[in-house]
Length: 307
Image (tube, rainbow, N blue to C red; front, side, top):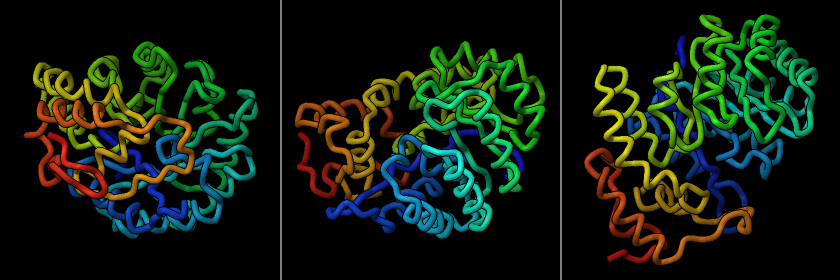
């Protein structure tokens, strides 16, 4: 846990039929990450729909995740919010609960100056390592700006780089910060993982439904077998390019992790139809040997058997 690297699965937030967070299924998803060979856990960020979560339920369910993990993997708590003071309150909650690290994006429409102030205040309230989520959806920082920020806030040990094109920006970050960072993580569902690794990244933070397969890609890369890592990634790629929240929930359902399909924001993504489910069932056969003790079942939860 002194050096975070590899595939850190992002947990989707599961909801009950009454739109409340399902603590039981959130715990089951965290347990899945531990048992399937992923290298860490992050909750809640964009995949976990932090923007739909109230402050009380978000801090309460940090405890749910930590209890389920029970020290088996490092847990990173997402502190992003719509205001700087709220972000700081999440950092304080992470400190009280014992999270291993925190990750945050700057608030919407923030300037680089406000982003710097936010990370300074997070560092004042959380003693562990900080991860900058450098995402195009919010204010993003250049390599030069990140280098200045790291000089000011030395507990920033990691960056999740998500500006497009991400591989080029990962090169920029690696060149600008050199040995000042322990790991640069990629994102984008792992779609560009081999190129990101080749440019100096040493990890990825994708949604967790196929995080075990992506962890295998990274481990093959670490072992020096880049050709096999790329081959496995090519087999997975037709699946992860389809990633939406309904897709994540469907795959976790079919892998026996959760049963929930409820969306708090159902208009954000179209539901999967029969053709989508059939195609996913065909595509998953290419990686079925990598799914370990969570195989893709013929039937799970509320979904029909797919021929």
